[in-house]
Image: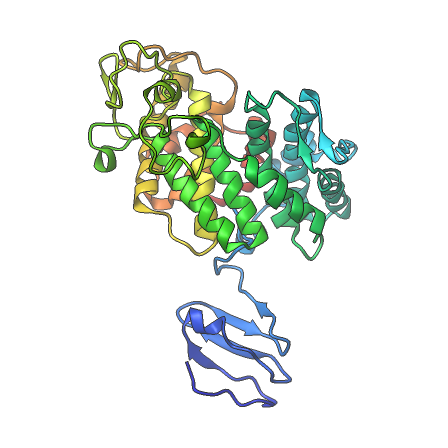
Length: 434
């Protein structure tokens, strides 16, 4: 870093500094000072010290999409018009005002379902600059911001925690897309930090862990809170290991659920606790009887890399899990951080394993030969979602089978104009970027 910058210079000053030093510069010059942060694009620091960050530099608050990526969203054509004409583009819909709390299961359902509409309005507004869509997104935010308690379902069921984690990636993405220039609300920040964030875990998880992780990281990034971010990233990496098997990192055993009592199984208390066979059996959809503790096998089926804890449930819940961890990894990247090799290996292997099995099901309406015993039908539509998110995260490292999945007519719009849970607005916001 240079030893001094001339104060009061009427001209812009260009200096070479590293990224850390750039954050320390306090500029008092009357005009803008250009700080070249090698090897990144220029960062403009105004006379008041406000940093104008170029659109492709990762930073807090970018969440799933950079400004450049959002600039590429279409404002015409079939994907745009199809999304705008779908339920997520309905500007006549009136959002539920939840007041200070969610008190019924029906309200909890409304909360997570309406988050899809809120994100839809934000995405479409960012593309077409339609003021009515911005107003609808803000209407949605205002109906949520004052919530101080969530008690729609029995607290012993974890259902409120789960549905909250379906909604939050949509809500927080919408907030980030609209931006604080258009909506900066202290009550919303309090809701995210003090009400929502503490609810994002449960005693066992399967796909739950993945959406908890994505929600935690989304909140931390939007609030630009380093402490929350460190916690959220640690959670995502820890739970990904418990959900997705990879021989390079795990050897011949899965990562069990840890903790003898319920509180001990919640993050972060669970770290360092002893393994617990019973919840591990539940987590992997096994019966206790005959389950070889922690061995990466099931009824004669030896695990491949990428096998997940929903392996004998159905393809849809597996897809929900994979999408949640992909969203988590994208948020980590968008903050300028690095996804761990451990987590990225698991996601990549899971994409290959689940992609191959999903493609077989799409083409044959049955599961591929040799599938794990006990696998149920492809319930719900979620097995058709999430594949654009996978490809956007993995880029050139995307398993080739994903392109075949995306080419299947059952994956293409209009199904993905809206979506459900945390797998939403994909044809528009994800498919146009890959």
